[in-house]
Length: 147
Image 1 (cartoon, rainbow, N blue to C red):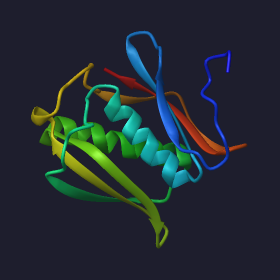
Image 2 (tube, rainbow, N blue to C red):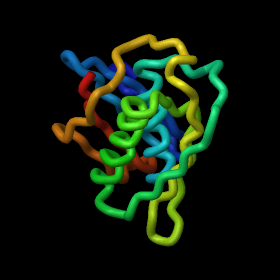
Image 3 (cartoon, rainbow, N blue to C red):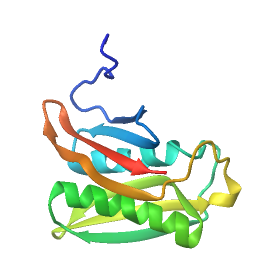
Image 4 (cartoon, helix red, strand yellow):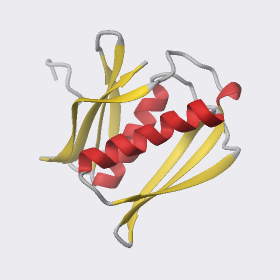
């Protein structure tokens, strides 16, 4: 597409970073809300680390009470930022599913010290222009991350 938007088809998942002054802007999309959330995590990680050759050291399970879609996006990405800061862990893979009214997230994590850092490590998730919801192709979201 000429406008810089990624070509999307129904049922496809993906993510990208877009230019944003002094911060990182992540856009993600998926066939379902859960897949979109997983893509947002992967997009956040790829904005600062190359995990393509990394192997998980552990799996962390996190559950979120189902709230608004925007809250779930912010809470999940805040969890990734917290794990980076407090535990030095970076997700190398993520699985998100809805079970019993809660969002069940499994993060396969590696030590941040063991992966190449290629950008500024995120510090916080901004609520400014945060959005998540259904669209013509499934689900999409966008979030700005302070670095």
